[in-house]
Length: 181
Picture 1 (tube, helix red, strand yellow):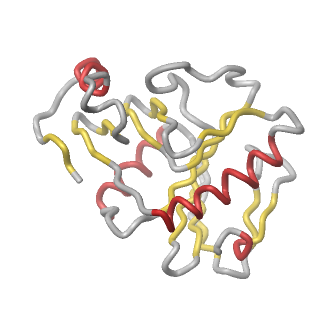
Picture 2: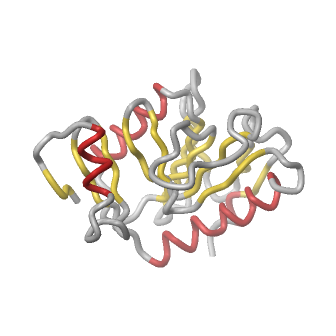
């Protein structure tokens, strides 16, 4: 859902997000435009499963930080909100305490909701590619995950597939079927 069509600067967007009426909204800023990200309980449940598994793997090994669907990041100049994100400890030990994290995540998980638009997703994937972010795009309706690894062809995994953390989360694997309720 487009909140505002007037193009603005990153600084204007930051000020817009701090207005009292906007502080609880999930807002993204891509190519000068503000987008609001509505979600739903089912998509949130799937994102929560990713958070559980990634955090359960990364934290005991002190690999990095995991954020949920309210964590925002600056990615290739845009301000983006991921459903789940992971950033390696060797890149950033402590996350930003306010605003959008200044460093893009190493892994972004985007759970597609019925209200998501293909054009908006394509724009986000372009920004993630510019920042060399590994992206898992999750399609709940078809129970598939499309893996976008920087510099490689995308890979589509079905319910029998296994996600692999690659260089971002070495040794991490999860069966796709464990993600869907």
